[in-house]
Length: 105
Image 1 (tube, rainbow, N blue to C red):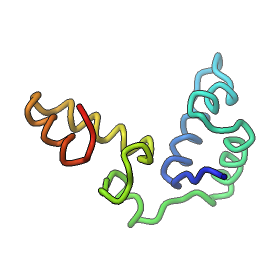
Image 2 (image 1 turned 90 degrees about the vertical axis):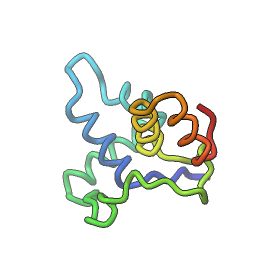
Image 3 (image 1 turned 45 degrees about the vertical axis):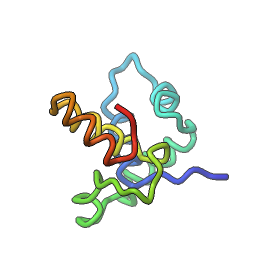
């Protein structure tokens, strides 16, 4: 079964690969993101050909989480968004937010 990645994830992966320091290889970035090296290479080519551009609708809604998706299926962007939201709250607020999202603090 092939994994499906959002355009937002692909663009962020490409950006990370392109702005890496000279001591980090594209292969290391791919491993860090748990994607295949050839997949990341393909996304870089697509990016250079402007095939990975987001529509305005996608870019404004990229961090919206719904209960239709299990937390295990959230994108990296969605996971980071909930971590940031929880970090800005006190313990009670973070616990409440996590309960609403169906996850444990």
